[in-house]
Every structure is written in C-alpha cells, then in structure tokens.
Length: 361
Image (tube, rainbow, N blue to C red; front, side):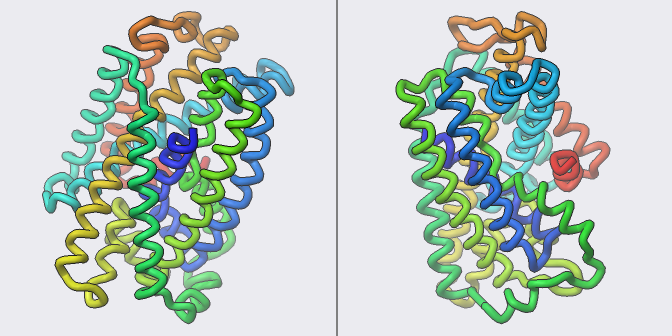
C-alpha cells in the first residue's frame, strides 16, 4: 500500500511541476506546499473512511454513505474525470521522458507522443483484459527507485542550485499575474498529489485496514509533500520566473524534472549530468507507466462500485475470473482515455494545459 500510494502520488510531480509553474511562476513552491498541506488534511478523512468502510469506491462511497445516492453519483462521475485526465496526462508525458533518456527526438514531436500515449493505454488495457496483474512487487521497486532519484535531485539541487535570493524575489505577483492565476493554480496543484483514490479503492483487499491504511497513507503523503516542495524550490532556483514566464514551464513543460537535471551543467561533470538525465528520464517514464496502470485499475474499481449500487449498468459491477474487474469497464476506460489523448492533440494543439484546465475545472 505504501508503494502504490507513494508511486501514484509522487508520479504526478513529473506531470504537474511545469504546468503549475506556468500559472504560479515564483509562487510555485508555496502553492505546492499549501496544496500539499490541504491534501494531508484530506487524507485524514480518507484514512478514517477506508478504515470504517473497507469497500471499493473511495470518495464516491464515503459521500454516498454520508449523504445520499445522488451526491455519491455526482462524486463518482467527478472522480472518473480525474482518473481519466491523470491517465491521459501520464500517457502523454511518458514519451517525453523516454525521449530525453534515449535522446530520441521524434518521441517528443507531435503527433508521435500522442500515438505512443494511445498505444501505452491500449497495451495496459489489453494486458488487464488478458489476466489480473499483481503490482505489489513491481510497485515497490518503482517507488523505491523514484524515491532514490528524487532524493539525489533534492540533495544536489540544494547543494548546487538553491538561491534564497532568487526565491524571495519571486514571492509575489509577476508582471501580468493576478489573483485569478493563483485561483487557477491552487486546484491545478492537486495534480501533484493525485493517488488517494487508488489507495482507497484497495481498502477491501487489505487485511487490517484500520491499522495499515492510515499508516501507509500518512507516511507516503507526508514524504511526497516534503519532496515535492523541495524539488519545486530547486526548480525555481534553476529556472527563476522572469518577465511573466519561466523556462520550467516553457522549454521543459512536458519533462520538468529532466529540465532540473540539465541545470546541473557547469556544476557537475558533463558525463555525470548525462547519466542523471538518462536515469531521471527512464525513472519518469517508468513511474508514469505505473501511474497510468493504477489509474486504469482505480477507474474500473470505481465503476464496479457504482455498478453494484445501480449508478452504472450492472455489467460494470460484475467480477470476472481472468481480469477480476469487468471487461466492459476496462474497455470503456481505455477507449475514453485514448479519446481524451486524441482530443488533446486535435483541440488542444498537443498542449497539456488543455487537460490541466479540465482537471482544474
């Protein structure tokens, strides 16, 4: 549970840092820290809810039990939108990190990044249709690898790039920035902390939910909030907000963590920077792949809960021996996520801000 929670939540930083920086600019570390604090408080409700109601469905189940079926129905559909957007963003960003690791430029170009993203979603859905996957060992390896990578980035960044003067100059509205940008950035920063729902949907498979779920949630979320704030501080030190923009949100929007690695050039030997770039690129692609996988799992489990309570067709609530969840839920989730990726390329000009705006909404 710790591995799934940390991997799912920490993976969002690979997506969110550049997107949040585009709106919050020099206030990015503060926005992420404030949102992380709120997120940690919300996790108290999730820990209590999953311990008291060890049933799949997450917040939709909590709201349905606390209020009524209509409130649970609306909450469930909002969560579907969240899951699908995170899935699409993970699939769109993974090729960019892979491109930086392998120095394959065409993976960053339109439409190939979207094509690879669609193939990634289709592959995950296809594997889940064929057999039930057990992610425990793999999730643990990915989470530990990502934790080590982010720890190295924080240590090197604080030692080599940290600039309190640059950060203090950015603590205020930049030219052309106002309260509406901050209001947009705050819910947008929740992108950096998605993953609570995935863990909540595993409650009914936990042997001791009253003890294990709060412990895994608090440890993983507390660690992610600290790491996220520190990496944002390093990123804004390396790419300060100037003239209403930052290179973290311009040049490195779809691979911001790799952008931080490139800032070490001149501070570290070129060969070591290349090694770090490859490791961060591969780690980012791997954890985003894992995030897309768990998002599909979370979405289908939510569909199962809503199907069991008459909020979706009964087929979505059916269990199957091979895939565990219903094949209809898997097919629908994969198809809609692919449609979102395609729509982003057509209507959003391959700009992730299109999806980020929908998430903020």
